[in-house]
Length: 399
Image 1: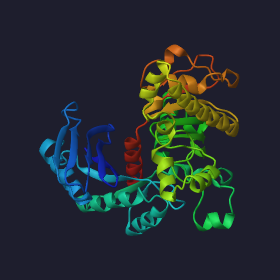
Image 2: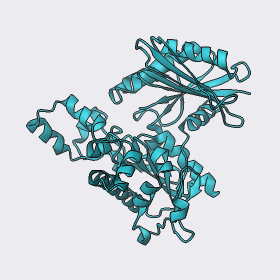
Image 3: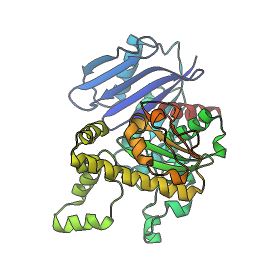
């Protein structure tokens, strides 16, 4: 049986899954952290044989080439056997594809040059993604490598949705527009929701709510993204764990002028010290819900801000789509927080959206959480970005 190795390479980390594609079963998964530091941490799980007991160890890992060597050593020592499950292809998550990449793409020297050029748009991610690609090509030189871009699903955005109202020539020269992110998740979930309902994805208008530490909403018409909350960067849109989401740009100018914040200070503020963390001192939704249940006013206000923004995007996309067949919650918060789901759609009965409190209880899915007479079917559908990357990788090499 052949498998696809899915790789997500960060600046100091390497996540991987080995997926057997005939039955779409995860055979192994792992995370290598602290690459380039004095001591790295390796977590390897043989899902096929012993899913509940990961192998954890520490050792120096100088770079991504070393990380792949360590990964292969774990497979050789702890399984599963790559001889029994030969790697057919390697699928790589790449954050930014700009306007150049709108589908899964076999990696060539020219593709790598383009990924490097697009690092200007994703300086924290694309260089690390490229390091992983180069290292993986050394480790697996005889199989095809495929890039799956976070932005690709949103390549179908119409100009009215992706263009910002700033000077056109300046924006075009510096590639400033809405790109959107979490595309792999939104694409997987929109298809999975349709499959769960026994529908063709092309028949459905959907609002997908990917709610995790990072959060985004996407309007999907007939399987294509037509609007999305994240923009030029993953900072725009919903309130997130540590990111602000939408904010008046003049606030940044004001803080630069009166508080003496530099560009680096503002970047840190918006990406790492804002969102739920900035509002209430905690980025974890579970902590805030526990505090709110005890009457903590700061936590209650933070959740109110979070849900006010979320409801605003639901309403916007409802209007944009004209007809909504499904609203789908996914990712860590979306899949596991019944209170968030209830608050996000409370009071929208006039729009044909009715949540069944009993169905909404609990975690996980897939499941329907709307009432039988709700005009809009509300779902919880777990996301699986690694499987989506593997599927697109296989389609790219077979097509």
